[in-house]
Amino acid sequence: MDPDARLVTVRQALLEELLASPATARDLSRLVGIPERDVAEHLSHLERSVRRQGQRLVVEPPVCLACGFAFTHRGPHRYTRPGRCPECHGRRITLPVFRVE
Image 1 (tube, one colour):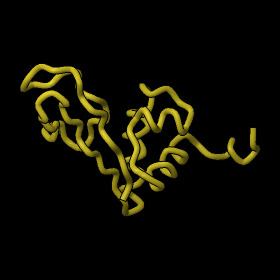
Image 2 (image 1 turned 30 degrees about the vertical axis):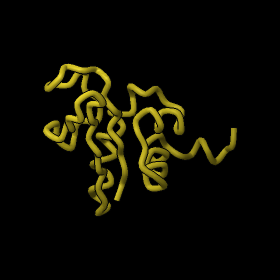
Image 3 (image 1 turned 180 degrees about the vertical axis):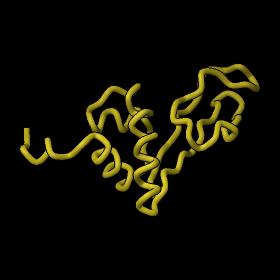
């Protein structure tokens, strides 16, 4: 393991990845090496950190693949994929995509 890699925190690594390109929680999990279920918690803390730096964490909402319903009503602070679509009750839903701008 690279000695410099240990000096970077998980949230710093997440920020670097999100500054480089938009990513889903699954992508971030793989890139940073943490469980996917932990990404949402780290993103909530990261959102506050980047806001203090004059940036913002943007969440592109999930979309139902069956009917096209966009989950824009979930608000900007929901970082997980919904369980089912309120319109058609389908479960094939895209992952939210995150980016920092």
